[in-house]
Image 1 (spheres, rainbow, N blue to C red):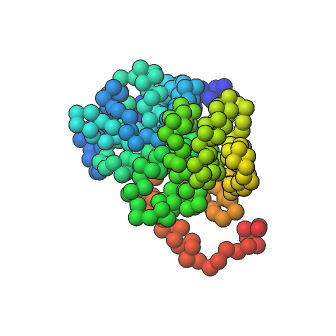
Image 2 (cartoon, rainbow, N blue to C red; image 1 turned 90 degrees about the horizontal axis):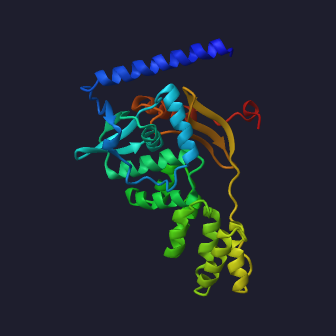
Image 3 (cartoon, rainbow, N blue to C red; image 1 turned 135 degrees about the horizontal axis):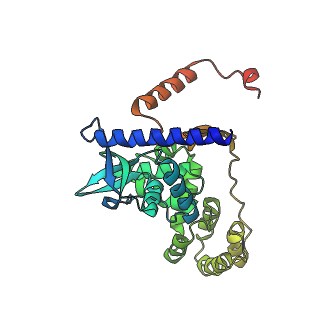
Length: 307
């Protein structure tokens, strides 16, 4: 694209954004389950069920720069909270607008109970690859009571039960080590946490684990060797490492230059992930109906798939 074409495209997108914001200001009376408003940035509070412990400052500055140049592509989603509002989804956009000093932000208002708040926040963040396993584990614990079984919870999150239990393994760690993970949530993966949990069945393991943890934080020990260090101190055989299914990305979905979902495949699953606000209710139902119709057809044609 030539410099002239890029300039024309930028002007077009800026005008579209201006029109969208103008329309939003004119739709204050619209209510069809969700209201489209311009809200004061300072009147909005974070989602109390937000699983993310750390927001990357460089990424926020980049997002803020994009919003400053091209405007806010997607509204945040909020719910009423007395005389204020609570975020349901879109905290990175809200933080970026605060960073820019914007007085207002485009928002969709909807009713959402605590269960929906928790599930939405988790689903939105699991779509992003930089959310740590520890943060996901905490968030899963917050919402597990909303599901009748671990199987249903795993299904809702698009995970296997085996993988779900790895996320839940962080709870077996002692409180002081979980506090250290709060400050460095990417320090330990769910597979390493599951290995450590098995070692903690031996009451002699805890002092060894704390010693190993100090080495881990100092960069003297890799997380994959944490359980092995404890096992060696106990005179036991090193536990077999947890194997993670290799997931191959097939396609990324974008809308107006923004990442909204992926298609991927591992040895057992073909997975489509979309952000919770990527589809309307009607579009979601159409997608479900399409998949059901597809599955109702005869089995996969191996020659056609090329496998």
